[in-house]
Length: 219
Image (cartoon, rainbow, N blue to C red; front, side, top):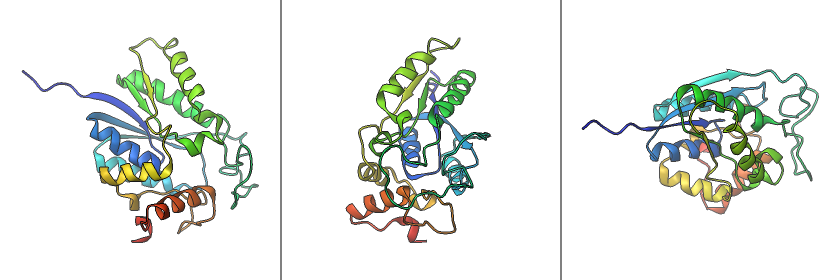
């Protein structure tokens, strides 16, 4: 009897810490993986290279897509806006309008064509507090909607980190052997992390809470 065919998954991979742990988790679950990474003119473009390196490491099929969002006034994209270096109330200026809706829509089309039954996204508790398209009610509703509008088999949207914080995600990543030194989180995308933007502060705080030096600084 031949070997049982692997399940196939699309992993939305940014190159950051959370999506890297997600990638290794999906790999452990014995999926055949297609990673999908987006270039939407984000200032932290170093994450694109990080995503490619991580994909290669796990032997995933890697697809890079260039998007154009000329209407966006997000500080992650607009040259006229600076990425904030302190916490601001409400939806942060780094929010890119409907970004996850756009990413997931591409992922659904990709999944239907490569016959993947699952799409994984690394949304977590710190995301949904400020980004409306990371919330469970949206993700649940989106999952229902797509399956009313595709011709192929059912596609599942999976978000295993939704109730987890950064510290828990790092702990999981350590058990999975994630090379955190290959990830990139800083929104500014400079030669070194700025350690002041939201993404840097969340990452630094989580490693500090665990009493661990961020492997990114051990290079």
